[in-house]
Length: 523
Image (cartoon, rainbow, N blue to C red):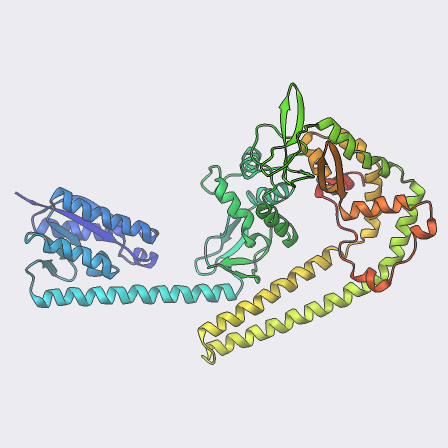
């Protein structure tokens, strides 16, 4: 009667598969050996090159459990390093042999059969081969890490790019390009989420309905969507081993400013939770007494907003959504008071002041670019010093991380300056015109679009004793201030101190993309 045996096959690299050491080749070799030794193959366990370390350990564990439960005494492997790649696996295999004198491990190519009563020379060969296999793996890991660091230094991501990108080119010369099928949806995900109108669940549903699919053609998970919105790869950087490298050579899908706004929305926690019904003022209003979020609920066909008293609070009133709308929409009356002539006067004044600010921006851009170039030169010198082993690996990584972080900050500043370099004074008159028609626009929109418009106008909404108060966005507050001061034209157009004006941040903060799209559609 033939003795039962199990085959174990493993390849450690794609090169081995291409040079005759594939899994089918190993399987054929071991089956021929089993036939010669009058052994019956009852099961084959295989580990491919593409399997992760966890998957390889799982297959090895399953095989050892199978041998134990089924009482199989013979295990056939091509070589020692095919069975064990670390000392832990070697100990497990050794313990399995020591429990029964009939158990054997056949290393076919090395003509070595190991068992409990094997000679000392045979066990010594086993020990030496295990150590050599471990050294090979350690060296391979070291070379892989070295190659990854070199690729990062050159501006390329050393792994599979995230959703929205794909690789092209031959092996060893692959580059990362935008995936035309998925990239538009990924970019839209950032734009949608930053509005504050979508929870991650709602956003995931919306993107799926619009056509976003994973590489496997399935719906992406909620956690994967959150990871995507946190990945700096999409604005041109690369995160590897918790270190952000700002020098990515791939094409960004979103601007750094939009990415930062998205991260702020994620961490702020004021994006709405997933609800079947969307309320206009959801998570936009706070209690004037305890500063908690005001929540909405439907009662007898009306929508009411009230404080839920999660903190000590004496507020006991509910406020109708219609009353809140009437209160906040009163600001639209101010916009409607702007005449065409007044808007033109403001436009001409801003245009006249723009020249001095442009000169300041130009000088700032030159200084930032000079500093960036200097850091790049120092990075190249630092890299040469590392290759020449003038400095240690640890010091090189520390210095490199510091300079690359500064470069990233400089790039962000340059990007912001260039974005504001457009002739905002030419769009400002259109923004005023849009503000003059804001009530008309609001009344024609659905609840989701109304919410977007309101978030573009108000920075804060508060209810206390059923009285609604608000704070305006800086750009909107400036328009309101000019209108309120229009009686005194000298005061309205009084020139500001040039030094203050040049350095004043956010004077013309852009409105929400929803309003700007309305602008573009009317030009």
